[in-house]
Length: 265
Ligand code: BTN
Image (cartoon, rainbow, N blue to C red; front, top):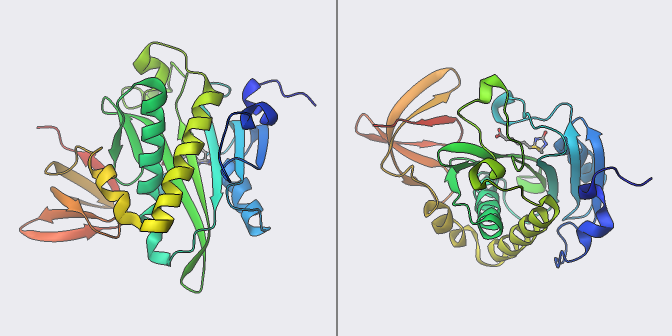
């Protein structure tokens, strides 16, 4: 069957991809519940590293902290990638930072738009969210068995539902131009693969400075919602494990999860 969307033409997508593994196996759908669900099921059946699951529409797209991911069909990029890194379980907190840097670099190179990282795994343009990353994994004996990196990137969508108004943006809104999605996806896959090979060889210290250079959170006053409680403080840095370090009431706290708002003064 010929796909209705050019993005789903996997042979065309692979042409000019120039990766070793990432995107060399592609499962593409017109519609699916969630590409992360599909990728997790495939990873459980031994799908190889670099397998890509791509869909034009998700009927149950998921975000972090139990939220939904809403994206208009045929205008954006919603995909998941299977990784099988040889890493200890603790590295799970570092992988979103790696993915954020890789996607930010690819978007910037392709479109010329400056992209900022917000801990733990959002990409912002002009303070509005342009992409979210949902990392889900499976552990075996304290080691990572597989990881699914799910990425939702607002590409050509120009209107957003009322609950996202003023908080979400897209590459088209920021550049004033329609962005060719297949080329952008290829650039993202290349960037994800290049940085992945680097961190596997050199460790995550290769990526943390790149993430830090893309955030304006350091020294900023923030509030963090975590398990129903709210904490306020000033961000002082990132731990080597990828946690956010916040000074609050004279003491330093290390945060591994949470929903962070930057307080504009
Ligand atoms: C977030 O901002 O909370 C993360 C959003 C992640 C959305 C992507 S879209 C592709 C993949 N499939 C999902 O169900 N979620 C991720």
